[in-house]
Length: 230
Image (cartoon, rainbow, N blue to C red; front, side, top):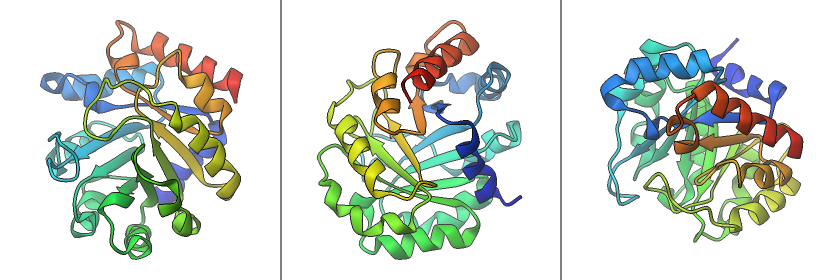
């Protein structure tokens, strides 16, 4: 099975809660990945920030490579960076199974989405709450994943923006049935059900899991809430 197909097989056990490593203890990264795998995570979400597209720096290729060495779980790599086309091949080689790029960073979205797919990764497009959803609509047919940000990209722990729920409903009507609809930002026990009910297949949660004392219990609670609402 190709890495793209392996990632897209998440469709078969949806909705899926993806732990975000942005909330991990990076001094114990391998142990954090091991704990999340043992807790039952189906895949991991990695936020790459460059301080250009978003007002924050996180991590880059070496951390993606380190996570890949630590697990066989699918890696969902969210590129919050300028000129992502310059780094697609490197991030795929580092271990990304899905690469998602921001419409705000793209001059030729379709070309970049095709570039991602040509590497062998699943390809995704994302947009911030302040960006008109119409900007991504012409490119949905090229996507395996559509990621709706429910907070402005750049920092963890922000307050959930309700615009995400209406966008998820809107996009669920537009995308193919096999497209994974993802939401990231402020996902917790209060917000996860509304997002799953609106059509989200992949729900990224950071502090709601990694800020808890029991990763398995947190994943199970969030998963039950999402499943009950989907």
